Length: 253
Image 1 (cartoon, rainbow, N blue to C red):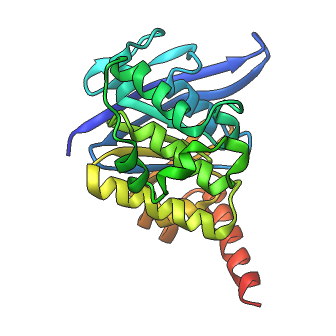
Image 2: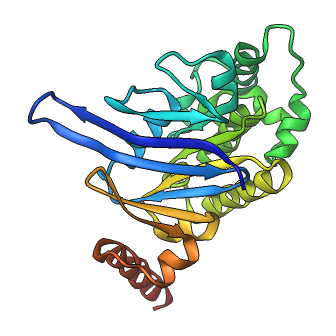
């Protein structure tokens, strides 16, 4: 299986000498059609890593390559088209004074050109929503609906890689399950690769093929999802799994 995204020794610090090392020497590969999960507690560096990969922030050192081409500080339109990001707060990611439809069309045209045709009806069907809802403003929609439209906006340009930063953490359990099911369906239909960042190992385990566990800006363990959950090697990973099991036990009581 070929690698679509390659990251080599990414490092990022804040505050100069003696400051905070947010990401330290992280490397990873994402293959065609793979969903890679990155899990860790708040402050582990997982969201910073995703922002570095997306180009929203610049690393102090390291390399990022997409489909064999090295990505620099300035991303081309093709680079942006091929790698899209979805954020935790979907409602805030849309302009509050623009309808969802306008925001999606504006984003699509910025990537595909002003004359590009967007089939909004088909796009809405793809994420399980009625087109009529897209005529509303973000504040008039639920968090789950906004997140579905955020996914629609991201996949409209048919990216090769989708970056998902804690996109289910602000949703209720039902909406969370629907979003996870939608992502799985998108992967099946399009072969799109994804990086899915979450603090919740149970969520990562239900969606991802492989997992990287982060702590203190470092990737401390990696492997297939099955191996990581069934036979964790690192004590921190064992603690994460133990906490998931405790939550499940309490839920049955």
